Image 1 (tube, one colour):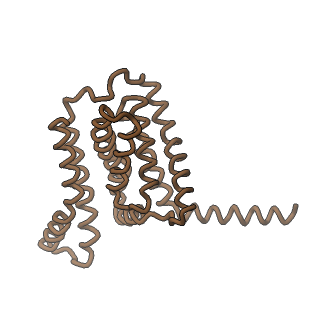
Image 2 (cartoon, rainbow, N blue to C red):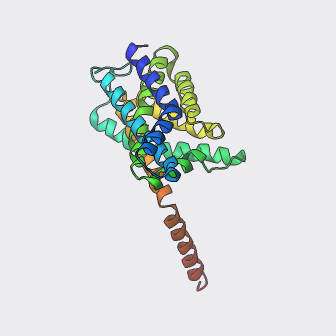
Image 3 (cartoon, helix red, strand yellow):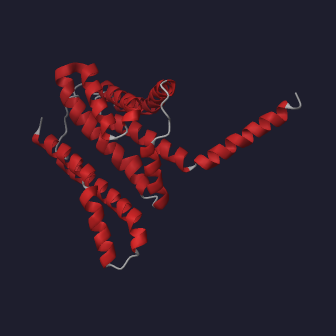
Length: 242
């Protein structure tokens, strides 16, 4: 694996672990500046979350700035075809999630994600976190798990094994092992998009769209549930006349 790739992977791991040091530092600075201690907890987490993701993304993009080729670059799909696959990738992701979700329900696994709920708590505190969830996060994850881990393994193991390994690592990185099937199914989908088009921006686009969709749904969940209740009431009302 290239030296730059090792640096990128190490930077990503360091970012994931940096909250153990970064959050206390932000809280300490906040106290020095005279901010209310009671409100520093959530604020420190949100500030460090945004800072660490943005800085890590910038570092990784700088490291990759000279790279014009990748292991899957040969015979890349045309731009129009790649755009089509990026759009189709959103629907493929939805199908993969639905199938994985159905299997989890059959196994008695609750569909609510603690990880998603925690992130939405951060979004409610500061909408800027949406940039991390919907943009910075997906870009980082696709570079790490698809371009580097999957891309390196693909040259040696072929699609299935490399997609399986990288998808399981991708799932484990989210620290929600009860939903490992759900995350792994997404990993497989994005790996397929990468192989099919040989352009990393295609799975990045699909991943960004999926995360954005989740944020929009979660952010407007109360309104959506209210709309569903109203539609049920209207259906019952109309049904009473039929």
